[in-house]
View 1 (cartoon, rainbow, N blue to C red):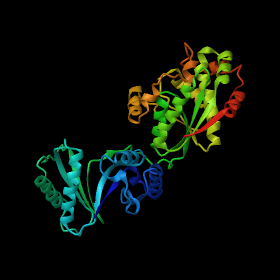
View 2 (cartoon, rainbow, N blue to C red; view 1 turned 90 degrees about the vertical axis):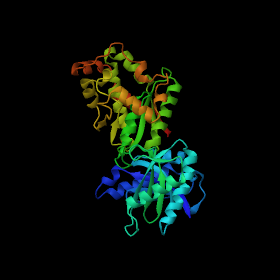
View 3 (cartoon, helix red, strand yellow; view 1 turned 180 degrees about the vertical axis):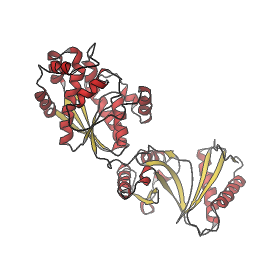
View 4 (cartoon, helix red, strand yellow; view 1 turned 30 degrees about the vertical axis):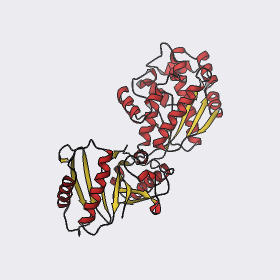
Length: 400
């Protein structure tokens, strides 16, 4: 008797040493959480693979065929730590006859779904050395069998339309094709960070990249209603939801920034508004980070991209906080960031025309290379400590 299962391949996790078991356990837990709405599942590990199948032989529509499995396969490969995933047929065997029969049956279903696929090659992995045929002999046997039974197929070992896989282990598995994942490390293995999330392209990508290194996320957004509309806030909530598909659940901290920003606009140098605003934002974000168990701040800054992202401006914003600030995009150009944004499904939301607080109050001629004297003069008439207190106290929490 055969059943369909999902084969998920681990990547960087398998290179870990004595703490590999911790990473693997976290990865399985993350998969269980991500797949909680796909029925009762059995998730277990064998070597560098994770296997997912319906629990206790339950009929599960997500495992019926390649088309039905697309939704659950897409969910599996969104979990960091997974390199790729395939829908496979699993069955017990005593000889090559069971492998031949299941290979033909699998290929009948596969070609119904993908009739445009005409060229193939067979690869076999023999994990049970007592099996009478070697891996090359299994490949040759099944390749010839498929050619005999399917007139539309022909062999192409260099650039086939698909690879037909046969794996002989405790059970036997046959499958074709794979859905590629995002690699990385399981979220929850590298601490927790506070992402400064705006409505732009960069910050969601920065959050995605830090989550790919195993970091849990919370996020903070600075809202200046009515100068920025509630649509801008809704846009940021949507971006947080997109990031959370990869990073897991998070809390979005929405800071009421209107009065703070108006105070800066009235009482600080216009050419220093951007840097002054960033310094206050980071101090508020650090307070929220410490209150919520975060060990770092994360921003979407890229060196030289805007006035607040010059070497001098970054140095003067760094100095107002004690915790590390991670900038995963610091050496990446805008087009590369846009490519990642499109790949994770955030780009179309990021370019919606709703301005955030950083763009509404931007100076016409910002100071790009501020000095210590510029900072002192810009903040001379500002009560920074009160601004930070007001920002922290005027924060709304949204569970994502």
